[in-house]
Length: 113
Image 1: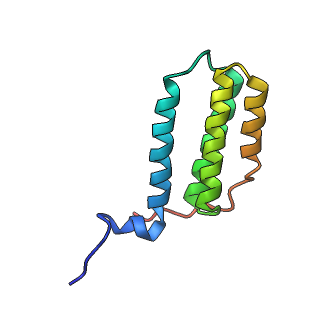
Image 2: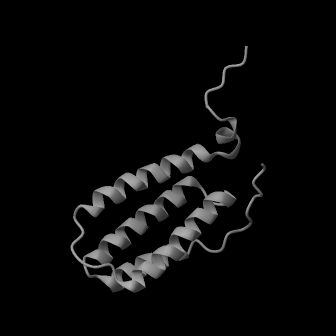
């Protein structure tokens, strides 16, 4: 008798469970942060945010960085977002740039159908 611990075996194969946990954690934090936003979101921050989110997602898909580094990058992104909402755009941009120091994605693994 085979007992599976996951509803979908691909979660274990691709180590997606830690990435999904990170995304869920970030979503809850973002929701909580949205309650205390004080100002408009600067366009410069929005552009950097899109770039950073894409980079983090691509590194997660390529599995070329540890979950700790990706989690740290996600938390730094949240600090940058908060700084931007508080009008500290220069500080926010510096935080976004620190995330971009993760570097380019080594290679993306092909998804199997």
